[in-house]
Image (cartoon, rainbow, N blue to C red; front, side):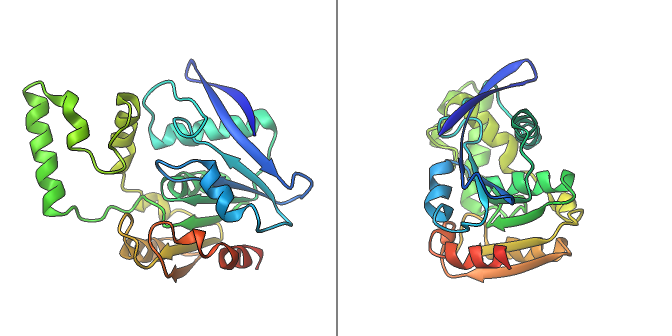
Length: 240
């Protein structure tokens, strides 16, 4: 594991990262999802893709990476770009799970010669259940009367137990509809999805596949963390 400091918008971010197979020429940037860290992605892929250099990164506010202010998805993209520029690292393949997949997709829009691997990523809005809509209405009422500090009782599982700073970040990124961005992706893309995923439903993956014209779609058995069981299959497709 290594640490580096990145200056972004007058704030310092300490980023934790790890590079595996540094002697290989083709480099993957592997990004974790919300609430996870690089260790989860290493658990899945560190024993695969021996002919590739792996770059695992803790996103700001997760794992051992710091966060200085509430961020938007565009901020995560820009911080990673600064990190890659600082380290003089060229990325050939962006791979991301869930929230990390959303960030990987946004990066691929700017790195035209890259390839993209998406694992049950976010960015397509699924309809909210009646229970969730009720909680939102109730929270807005409590906030209006000055009881917003009790947000933890109304937050989703991903939003619960967060610091106020990261909860604001969560609110900034959770309801983004990136359909227009996905339709602009031109790089070769492979999309893998858990058939039983409830966090990002299979329908979202099907929509994403339709929007990204140069894409292949692989629904696989499992939930939101299906890739832990299918890492070898995903790796074979990456090499293909």
